[in-house]
Length: 135
Image (cartoon, rainbow, N blue to C red; front, top):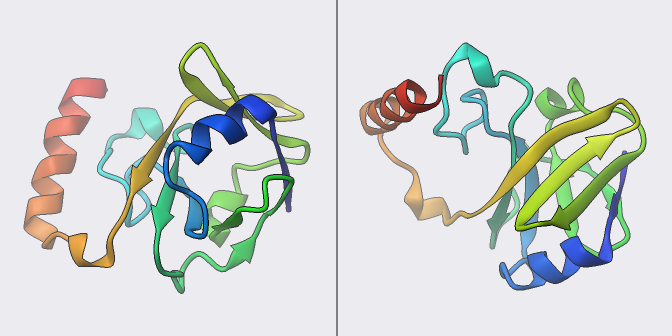
């Protein structure tokens, strides 16, 4: 898989501490371990970039890119990603698109520390509260 990261997006990401870190292109629809969103209205159309100091065994599919990022994804995300992937930054938002059109017009960037793992009950509560606000 390959993605073009525009100059504007590269500049934005450099301010988010992505240098020399692992960056995971992850779904943010409640289906990934990094997502707090939940609800059927977000399935497959919400993504996030998760920045971590360590690799993750679930995110091992390398994404070739022109920004020299250690960018990976998992098999679950590949279902929603087509050819001609592009990440752009305009008007304060990161936009992920492919040849079919815009996949997510507001990709978030999250810092992740492995010690930040919440217990399942706390995570479920957070997902329910956030899900009620967006769906």
